[in-house]
Amino acid sequence: MQIHQLLTGRSCKLVPLLMPFSLQIFCADIIAVSSSIPMLCLLFFAFWLGYKKYGCKRKSKETARIESYLQKNGTVHPKRYAYAQVKRMTRSFAEKLGQGGFGAVYRGDLSDGRQIAVKMLKDFKTDGSKRALIYDYMPNGSLERYAFKDSSEGGNTLGWEKLFEIAVGIARGLEYLHRGCNTRIVHFDIKPHNILLDQNFCPKISDFGLAKLCLNKESVISIGGARGTIGYIAPEVYSKQFGAVSSKSDVYSYGMMVLEMVGARDKNISPNTESSSQYFPQWIYEHLDEYCISASEINGEITEVVRKMIVVGLWCIQFSSTDRPTMTRVVEMLEGSTTGLELPPKVLLS
Image 1: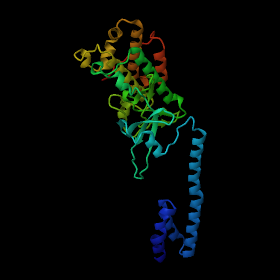
Image 2: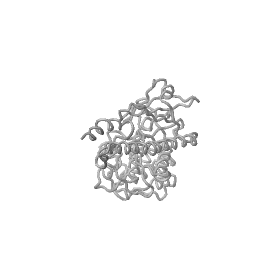
Image 3: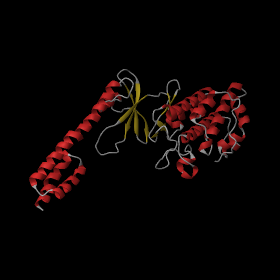
């Protein structure tokens, strides 16, 4: 009893300062092994030395590895900044650009004059640490700002050629995530708001808060629950009865976004027309030719661009993921000729 009181009353209170919290179990093990106080002290000391030698050594190795990586790849990989530096870059977070689910975004400048966007991540822990992500500043904002703003409200709209270039750029970006990375990435939240445009309207895929890393050989992805934004979520993501989740789920989101770009760009669609009361992908599936001619104003090249975007979008939103193309195939269809590019044979579901 005295030994037990000694260990629980003194030694274990010191454990959090010297060892991981789980070592409280170690005290109970000692009681079962020995009833000699000198032996207990010897074992305790030996365990403490072992932790100091191997536990701390493991941490120091990890820290050294990170520091070495940053030093060797500092010019081509992310750089680490102190909080004071970030505060100085943003002039004490003076200009707020927006608010996301994972934190607020502020405008800032690097010492070389480059403009940046700083996303201060919410602190989900209680350790008071400050974490941030620093991005290149995208002066043209998101795709939603340009492609979906009514010009009558003072917004800027993009022409068909520029919209097509953006659609191709996004497709190439997704193809890289799905096939070009060493570890495959599925984004799970492709939508206009998460496509940022630089000064030349080159699209950048952003906000990887819902993304999932996968082994290259994996074709099926396990997720804990539905993720994404309503209207862009593939059927299999919100219900397992529709099939397995895979990179084809991003393909669906991409297709919905492209069709939305097409529908929002064409101001000839009146809210009083048939298209306003019918599921737009279904309506455009049934009126493809007349829509393309109307949207392009009898310009042959534009007609081909519009048709490509529509047909590719319709293929991407097929109900069954096996009927959807890969992003590699999507890029091929967009960059190829419309000759032989046929509509998908199946009627779409709303």
